[in-house]
Length: 406
Ligand SMILES: Cc1cc2nc3c(=O)[nH]c(=O)nc-3n(C[C@H](O)[C@H](O)[C@H](O)COP(=O)(O)OP(=O)(O)OC[C@H]3O[C@@H](n4cnc5c(N)ncnc54)[C@H](O)[C@@H]3O)c2cc1C
Image (cartoon, rainbow, N blue to C red; front, side, top):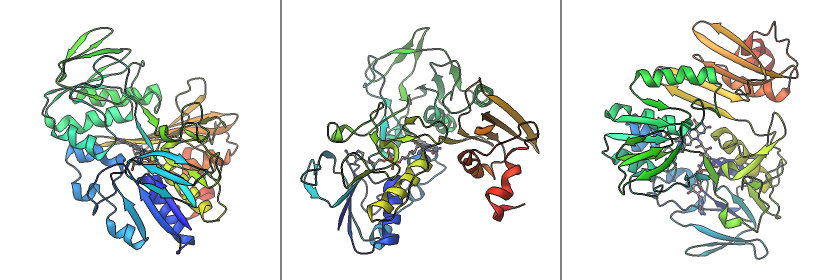
């Protein structure tokens, strides 16, 4: 059997591992549009900010080397963009060639959304998603940088530049930064830390124009900010252009998949940031563009492609942010102020829990996140919880993970 995978990131590698667990014979070919050193074809986008900051060397950024692909007997074709998929002929068309498949996995991920404002494509306007993006940001010598978007990528980009003594301004359209990830309370704790280190944070403010080519300033609805580079971090869009009209897409342009990661066409599977998933919490369907979902959906797709029946339980948002000496962790629905929340403080760690219909739907932990991994299990099981006597994740260590008793 010929297995073809589009994309060479988290979902792809997870699928390869799973496929080879069950199937040693099929041929596997990966096609990816990024032109990277063939000896070092893989990095995780999650750690790019550490690379920019200088905490992580290039050697360590490229964490999976060619020997992995050789061991898994995978052919890797880098620097090839897929432009079409033709399910009737079972063929994938790239800018250079054509590839036939018996089973196809689309793991093409997502790309940064670009704001539709004048100057958004000018010189020295950057995004942060790929190694190439990180290299551009790293080698830019601007002393004044505006970060458009106070989401996780914008905040991480700002933090990665702090050591370079640049003046950094974050512009956020919402009333508080990180509003899709943390509650207002936690967001304000993070903002306080950023401001103390000299980052300016402007909220309730909308960028309307980037002037100069290369960049000279950003105009908002309230002021003009002088700068010589801009980093835009305003969310992502699924990379699905090449399957428009071929596969069923959801409301946010992600590929629609079932719980086995099957798309609307036979023998075509999809996984990672390019798909829309059923939520683990409320059954809504939307993209969950985070690493753990990419890894798990890649695994489920890989298994099903080789005839192993594995199902995905549903998407959940999980984020973790290191701000200087503190770790901020968040999972599930945490920003709905209508839900009841419980705060627990122990040994310097602060925990917030959010409930709906007597079950946990989200949590935030600031400090010791040793047991944070158990929270997904608690949310997934929709266990009934007595909120008054609830003592946080520690209540569940025995039920969810007997092996990690302390
Ligand atoms: C700076 C940053 C920080 C992040 N931090 C976190 C975090 O803390 N926690 C977390 O959970 N997640 C984080 N994420 C998100 C996480 O990186 C993604 O969820 C994950 O990378 C998704 O993996 P993926 O395999 O679906 O696709 P991607 O990583 O998007 O990779 C897509 C692959 O497809 C290829 N491709 C795309 N289009 C084509 C085409 N037409 N033809 C050929 N190849 C194509 C690309 O070259 C690439 O190899 C972060 C992302 C960034 C950028």
